[in-house]
Length: 339
Image (tube, rainbow, N blue to C red):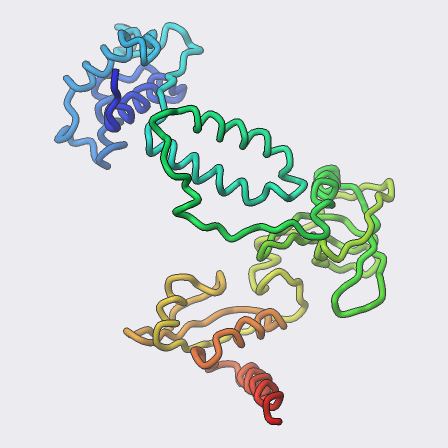
């Protein structure tokens, strides 16, 4: 039996309703309302009738392609149920389902060179194999229509699995680390808290015991990891969402958040409204070609670099110290070309 898109959706909704433990024994009217809400966002009865649900129930019980669903009616509860409680509808995938799976598969493949995702390779391969044997889906690969930002393999990714294990078991670690700003290798005793991905690079957010500080360590700058044999307890009051609320980028910076007011003009103003540059962004004024926003951020080197990237498209209204700093940085850039 050929399945059309709407019938397939109705069958899945009916199956979900019958298997529901919180609202068991659904009536025909309940099934009708659920299908209409799923397909049309209302339950008025304009689009789906009781007779349609009756035909769907008959098909589910009698069509081999639908698995002969063991649907029965309970007069005591005035609703439908499966006589086999373990039954679940197994419908063939339609083209829309397949395209979504292809998109998800291609997305996962971007991480195939990262060690922590290595175990996904076999699973992704199985999915691709199943998709390729469906004859009616022989069409150009989706990657011809979608380009992904690549996630390259880089030094330090080999530590991902080990660090994830240490975070889960709350194992204290000793690491050797060489920051970009210092040629000397440092040794830290740390409590690993969580891994953070930022711009295709991985970072470890941790608590350093000796300095009583939180640190963000780039995995590509770690040269050695060893366990101390000790374990740590949860950091009291540590919440990543609160911790990073006023930070910009990946770095952990001390200091107080400041109110920053920026003005963007022309096309850039539209990008800023569509894609905010920080979670604290609020619009103060806006017009067709201009938007003025406020942020509550710690003014860090990362934030300065981000503002510099907008060039003449941004004007700093507040604070005065930030305006002067950006002017000074732009002047330094101009001075480099003076000769």
